[in-house]
Amino acid sequence: MDLQKVYKEKLTTAEEAVKVVQSGDWLDWGWCTGTPDALDKAMAKRMPQLHDIKIRGGILLKVPEIFKIENAPEHFCWNSWHMSGIERKAIAAGIAYYGPIRYSELPRYYRDLDCPSDVVMIQVAPMDSRGYFSFGPNASHLEAVCQRAKTIIVEVNEKMPYCWGGDSSAVHITKVDMIVEGENPDILEMKGSDVMTEVDKKVAEYILEEIPDGACLQLGIGGMPNAVGKLIAESDLKDLGVHTEMYVDAYVEMAKAGKINGTRKNIDTNKQVYAFAAGSQELYDYIDNNPEMYSASVGYVNDVRTVSALDNFMSINNAVNIDLFGQVNAESAGTKHISGAGGQLDFVLGAYLSKGGKSFICCSSTFTDKAGNLQSRILPVLDNGSIVTDTRTNTHFVVTEFGKVNLKGLSTWQRCEKLISIAHPEFRDQLIKDAEKMKIWRASNKR
Image (cartoon, rainbow, N blue to C red; front, top):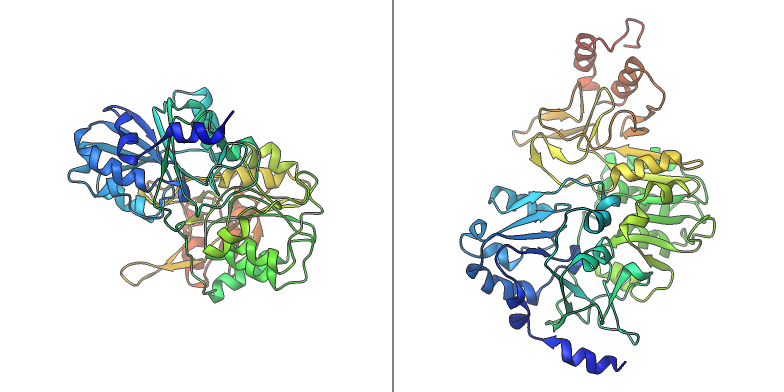
């Protein structure tokens, strides 16, 4: 096959490509750094002619042009598998909705369930010598999307990292219907705070005490998991492995400090395995054409069976708040949506099943609300409308700046006592009173 000839035959403009979209269609809009750019601009011009378009995507790093059209909700809705701040604002504008998922199951939604996809538009790396377009750092569920889609349009970006992986990390030109060469914009960065607070540091120190040499790491998004990475980079730990849903800058820092080599991983030895990646340009440069990295489907990466097969698996994730029963909310502030379930439960379950594994849910003990009032993140019960991301039966370690507790195997009064012990001292007395009313506080409990 003359790949270059096929390439030229399928090459078209963004304006021509989007003409395939018809009213009522379901569109898939890539994922994170792989969301389209030139095709987005072309769709913004075409969208006013259409109605009832349903678009799926997630973790937007910039506001799409289609969001800016007049009377946007009359023409389309955005359905997010995991929300960024941009998508949260789109909820208020009547454009966006969340799709609750267990992230490891997402590829199956496309393969096995009624999850139609008429057109998929993905930003990809340039075609390689064998005719493959790398999804860049966005393997996630895109192989399954391409298998389901009636029409596949790829937008080539010369700046997209070429990410090593298996079949799920790329799409072959024979499967592609149209190719668009975009303007090669810089890959969007996801920048977190570089400042490690004292609370972040203290929580990270507690977790670091539990991590042995040779452990395999999964870090969630946020300041505290990032702080753990920074402390590991400065520690004496060695021979660490990586198996994570999202690859973030903390891993690059640890790897460059010589802490990560994957030699003790009992599967995918020597490989840093991830489902998608986002961060700084330094991160994109590090993963580009790096054979140490392994970009794979989230159906493999997050599968509890895969995670549990890795010895000494350490899962470190954030929470919005937690109640005295041990229920964890990592998704909402009451009914106000924040992010999504993602793969947190996958890793909470998998880490506990791992030989020597541990799952950590971490948060600051308090936050300051918009009125300037100090509020506890440890609550008697979750606020009305809050989402339970991790049920009380699955919660393992919980960590705040006041300590760490293991809730596995404890009755309600024991859990209550442990959680109040790591709450902010200002709220402990009231939490005890609330616990007494709920009949989960024993008279012999420590006060």
